[in-house]
Length: 124
Image 1: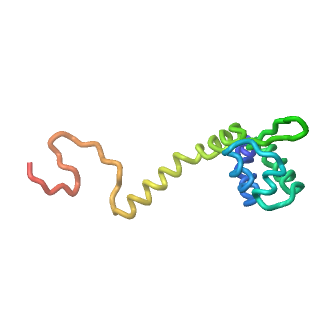
Image 2: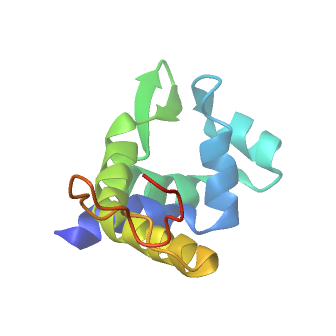
Image 3: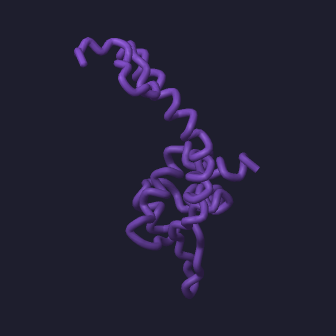
């Protein structure tokens, strides 16, 4: 079910959807407010909101004859879960790159009592 966890990232790949999404942390907005803020038509905003809703990034709440859109934390949780699976390998790659740049291994070797580590020129 990796595709479902990646859906928020796919939805946010579009710059217009990202702009709509980024307009919502300050509070719920109507389609008209979002259209004005983002600078596109209300019908285009509605289409983008459908994609964001399907990715669970926004939720809608009817208020009278208006529908207000706000952030849905479930989609952010899905994106975080998706990205976290890559964290261990990303850290390992970072460690390897640092080691290569320094010309040394970052993980210290286990030390035996009374034996100097390689490269240690201090006298005991």
